[in-house]
Image (cartoon, rainbow, N blue to C red; front, side, top):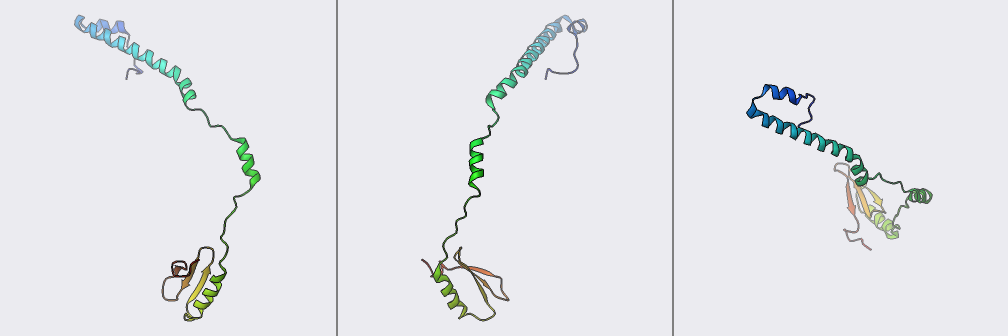
Amino acid sequence: DCDCLWSVDSDLMYEVVTGAEAKDVQAYFQEVSVTTTKHAEHVSSRGALVDAKYRPATKAKGKAKAKAKAGPAPRWLPAPDERAHDVTEFILGHVPDCVHIRQDTYNGRWFVIYPDRPPRSVSWTKRGFGH
C-alpha cells in the first residue's frame, strides 16, 4: 500500500543511495505518484458511481394508502361439516368414559386425550370419514 503516513522526500533518498540504486528509487517514487493519483480519482468518482448504481428505494404512497383502507386480510375458514358432529357423538358412545375427544371442525381432526398416554390428533379424512 503506497498510502502511508510516513513520507520521505525524494531528494533525501537520492542523497543516501548509490548511483545504481537511484534508478530503483526513481521508479518507486513514480509508482507511488501514479498510485496516489489513481486512488484520488477513484475516491472522487466513487460517490457518483454509488449514487448511479444504488438508488434509494422510493416509497409507494398509493399502495400504502390502498392497503390501509382495505383493512386486515380476510381469514378464510372452511364451512363446518354437519356430519362431523354426528360422527363424533357416535365415537363418544363407543369409547370408555376416561377418554376425551375434542372435535376440530375446521382442520378435519379429532383430539384424543387418554389419561395414561400422550394426546393424539387424528384426521377424520384419513380414517374413512371423507367428503
